[in-house]
Image (cartoon, rainbow, N blue to C red):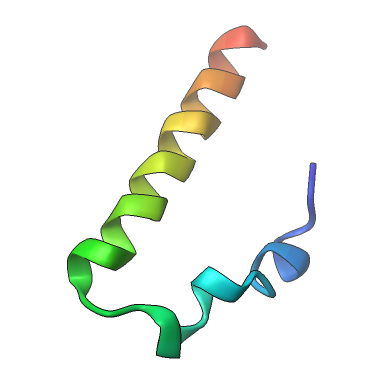
Length: 42
């Protein structure tokens, strides 16, 4: 599990890299999907 501070350092999460709301929504949706999959295994 990567600490949130390190995840926030990822290049594609910087505000100047986000072009529009869809561009922000896609990685957020994917992260939520992965989190749900992880919890289902637990």
